[in-house]
Each structure stands twice: as C-alpha cells, then as structure tokens.
Image 1: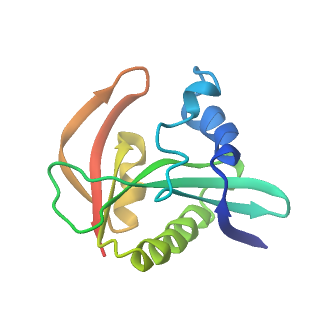
Image 2: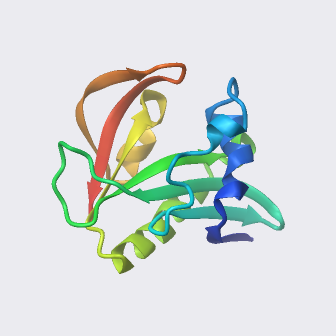
Length: 145
C-alpha cells in the first residue's frame, strides 16, 4: 500500500539527486526556498521506502496572473514505480493542500520529456521550449484549480 504525506525538505534531496540532477552534488539539489514557511514537500512511500517526491513553493510566474500561485519543483518518481499512478496521487494530495492555502493556479518548468505526463494531469503549456543549463529543454506548464 502506498502512503502519501508531508515530508521534510531534506528527505527529498536523495531522489532529486538520483533522478533529476545526477551530475550534481547533493548540495546543488537543495533549493533556495526549501525551508520557507509557505513551502511544502510531499512524498509517497511504499512501506518505509520513499518512492516519489514533489515540492511546492509559493511563487508566481510573470506570465500567469493568479491569487496565491505555487510552483512545483523537484517532482520525481523512482523508475521502478513509474506508470503506476503514484505521481498522480502525489499531485492530487498536493492540490488538496494548495486549495486549503487559497491557491487557484500552480505551475512548473517541465522537462519536455515529462510534458505529456503533465498534460494528462490537466496542465497546459505556456510558450515555447527553453533550455535550462546543465538540465535540458523545458516548457512552462500550469493548471488552474
């Protein structure tokens, strides 16, 4: 059975490093606002093993106007657990938290390889592909709630 709940920022670093930033150090996997009071981190567990993570930051996107917008960063699922709906459940749980906080729009810089996944979750692409140095091509995606 998969359990989903809030986790400390530090618990996300290993999966961020392994999946999202394998060429960088653990230190580089720590994001500036990880410890901000408005930030939250969520994880899915199979037993005691953390298998999927996501972090949400109270942050706007200059091309999107909304009350209390949040940004998703560091969404990742261990490869052997992908395609099982776990990431979708993490997003659904996160959206409940976001709604409680008055958020009506969340967004992310999605890797182009992940944009079909985010489309299935109801996100819309904004603008063209852009490159994030040392990480690769991305698109802005957002969802109104």
